[in-house]
Amino acid sequence: MPPNRLPGRGPEGRRLLPMTAPPESRSPFPPRAPARPAVARPPERGHDRLLRMLVSLAGDLTVEREEGGLLRSTLEHVVASLGLAGAAVLATGEDGELAGASEHHLAADPALTRDLALAALEQDGPLVQELPGAGWLAATPLRARQRSLGVLVLHEGPSAEPSLDRELLEVLGQQVGTGIENVRLFTELRASSARAEVLRRIIAAAREGKTLLEVSVYDGSDTGEKIYDTLTIIGKAIAPGDHKPTDAVAGQATFAGLTRWPVTISYFDRAAGEKGGEQTPVYAITFELYENGVSRALLLDYGDFVLTGEMTSIELKDAKPCQ
Image 1 (tube, rainbow, N blue to C red):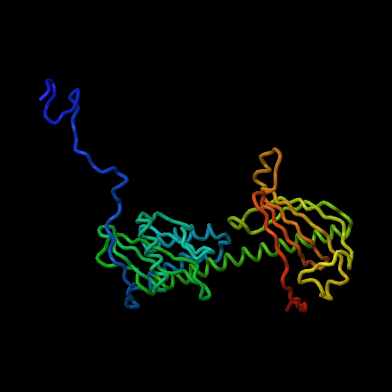
Image 2 (image 1 turned 135 degrees about the vertical axis):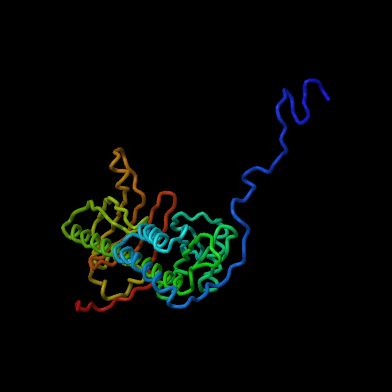
């Protein structure tokens, strides 16, 4: 043994320790157990709890008008009213894939959470899965009008058996799913109403011979609450019969005697504008606008890429008075 070195010590007398795996290679989560369907409970054991849960959600489902706020508030109240450890919502995207939408104190393995959510969707019903030493995980599909919107995942603390029964999970999935659907419909209606008002103001300005119009617009994008400042440029009027269109409008008697205008609307981020300085538009839309509100020859310019749209069909319906 070299001088001045003790057994189990390295150079300069430093203590030698056995090598261990790096922390990131150790899973902080317990091993998986197989998922199983949620069981039914006798009515007298579950109705009081179900009622408490529904009462706690009443305000969220009827007052909230923004999806992010609805999910955050709903998860918080579900966890509190049912005495859970955490919860999360995984939403179904346009591509059909699940993605995390909101979470409240959920400490379960993300991979396990996603796998259980996918299994619940596949089996079209609530599932529970034991987390050895860490309680239970439950997943129930979120549905509205027979359409899948995602999955609600709940984490219950350690117990001999899960207290989240099938009826409670099914009702919860239906109520939260309906709430999400209502918020999305509200957002769509609000955006549609805003767009209709903008078109009305553009047509009025065009008839007066104006070429510029500045309007603040709610378009329903992002979180559903974003406001854009817009600059609209109205081109020279195109008289009926001039530059005849070749798309679905061609041959339609309704448009034969209508004037139309080339229009470009540039959308600017209001929040960025409040900071001052020169602004470039987030995106711009160019189209031809008829005086009856119908538009054609659409072009969307996002800076990095451009999309064009051609009208391939149009169906005009008779206007009916409101009842």
